[in-house]
Length: 235
Image 1: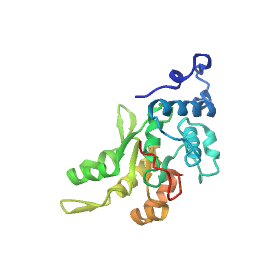
Image 2: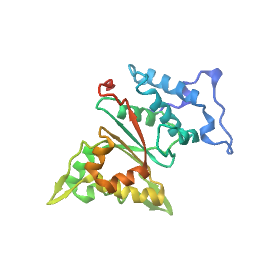
Image 3: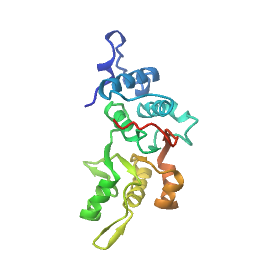
Image 4: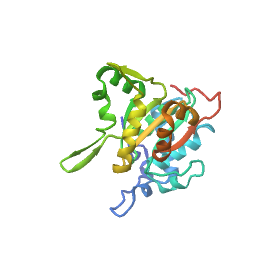
């Protein structure tokens, strides 16, 4: 269920709809977005905690998903850009997937995206071969009636999948998909988001230097928690 900010705002704090010349990000201040997030999780995710382990990442992601240019000045991200996707890393149970699902459901103005687990995608190749994964890679941008239709996707739990074999064809599925989506990112601005438990060295070891190099172009890298004993936020 997607709840808009106006539905949670008290009547005496109603936000005016901007005219066509007003940029989307200026419609809501960062404090209003934080207020919205706080009330949204209290209403729909009771027990979700905002603390020193996640508040900086939440702030960054609120700026990103509201398309606020202030995101591109954040010092904790190397070369931050609203044109790139989000790679959210962290320990098991740190709340990566839940946080991105909350932001998706809040209905902020950044392009909407589908959520697919990497295991699910690997199993699609196992069952149907390249036809099973083409929709996430080579066919993720299609032209219909003269317009480009882009399949923006959050691939959840990168690294949890394994290389699979379909009729003798062994494939590192997410390596193949990320390379295909990189081409569409460069040509058409296709957005990809990732969650992972792996660090940068482990990502490069699993997917190779070529993919890692492209990931630096495709993603804003953020880490949730960072401590070995980060709180388990699965609720």
